[in-house]
Length: 365
Image (cartoon, rainbow, N blue to C red; front, side, top):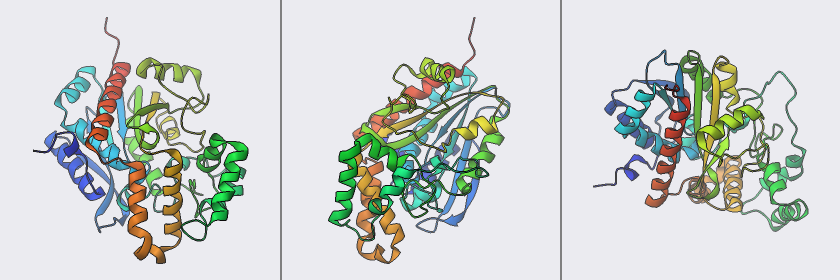
């Protein structure tokens, strides 16, 4: 019989969605689905599926979300399924008076097609901008855009040499910031933030309005992969550069909380982040959130996978010869398909979720 934890993880988006829906049914919970306009890789329905465990008028709500970056959903979905099968966890949430809202596959298109981005080629976690105002300009990305996604793959020696020169002149952190901070000029490039809200962006706002506007306290654990030591979940503060909010996050999740604002996180400072939607759509709530970021592979190997996959997207005529290898490389960069890794990520997620319950629960005299 398959191990209970590893059985929560799937090999395709369609299978992951089926496991999530089955787990919700087993827990006797209703599912609301925001159905995508497109179909998946295997012709399947794509949707942001939402399950709420707790009363509609709960004053304390915890969001647990997966698949912001598509292919990263393999990890987050498995964690969510494990949580829905964990009766002790559900009892603890009920006892704490916290409604838990599971958001399965914020970016179902990317999940299904093994892409990090949406069908608009947009990084959802760079898409939360005020598009009526001038957008940030990433001039460092402009310098290396043609090197990151070259005209041929494997990349020519001079393209790699150009990136190496940038790295040697400015350092790893500068290269990471240039690549991943977010850019709004190169629609066929990496970490593109878009020029308007994506389908996933708008669907998330509808869900936040539905599930977050009645609460007084709102917690959010957004599940990610791709940065840091393999299997280790970095707890990255997900909020504005606000000292009181960061202190509250550290009260909940401990001093291990890192921040892009002080350089303690493996993530570079980025723009257009998803958590801003919670502040805008649920302004009445005291918000506290983290991105739980699990390591997979070394940073430069992950960058290579991203470069190759974007090149493939830009050259669909090459899918027959290069597609399978590049796509597998992409999934491996954001999902470690081993039993040990799966156990590690679930254990750490359950710990973080339990700490969130404690933070959200009313103080008992």
